[in-house]
Amino acid sequence: MNNTTNIKQLFLNSLKRGTGDAYIILKDNPTINFSSLIIKGAITNFAYDNQSEGSRANYIYQLIKKSKHKEKIINAVLTKLQFEKDDFYGLDQMCDLAVKFYKDGNILGKTALYNRFEKNNLEEYKFCGQKQLIEIGGINGVLKVAEVIGKTLFENPDDYEDSWRIDYFQKQNKSLDVYEELKKASVNNKFIKAYYDSILKNKWIKPKRGKIKQFTYELVKEKMEKGRFFFLSSERNKELPTGTSFRLSPVGGYLCHLLQSILEISQVYSEKKSFIFLFDKMSEK
Image 1 (spheres, rainbow, N blue to C red):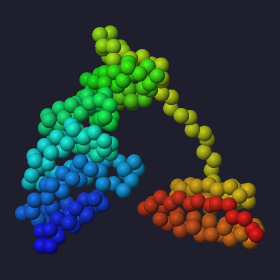
Image 2 (cartoon, rainbow, N blue to C red):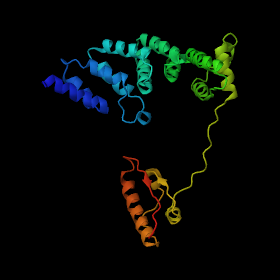
Image 3 (cartoon, one colour):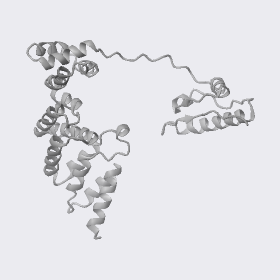
């Protein structure tokens, strides 16, 4: 294994982890062509937990911009986007990258995104690109989304679409009357009408949150004595005073003293990291 191969492997390992080493390796080795590895990282989301971490488009785009083979990489990503069917998280990441390409002046980013979005009605293609299309298309993006999703609604009357995305777009674009634009477009387009009717019928309502109860050591003691478990974040930990003693059963007393120690430690680090504590029922035997 030669030195170039070793460097490429180090680059790929870093890229998969999403660390900054990849950027440094790319910068320090201008004679090595990393384009195939960057393409691999662009069309595949290598996050350990895709749902939690989300798209790595911001990270990948920094590598693309630094590469001497930028155009080759962009063309490969946009081509893959238009024909990929199954990889939802890879598709979502490529859609994000298409937005970045377009905003940096590459019109093909928008074209590829529109082309892939129109395939969402095809049975073998997974749905993607709704958020990104609206981001770069504005009201025209909204109308395209309404038409494509509306086609599914028109053909499947039991399906529905709620109003959350349109309400959010309206909130971000107060100079527009989004519902009025949809209403006008629905006059001559049966698919947009199906979409418009559905969001009117299924208005999204923001869930109400109950009043948050302040944590005290008395409340913690009560929960523990009742054998219930609960979660404490570092922010909630700050509500608890230090230096409080408890008179409980041996197990309960031990847990409370352990709790107090953990809380005191967590308060020191709470600005750096969020802590979650789980206290489960312990039965005396």
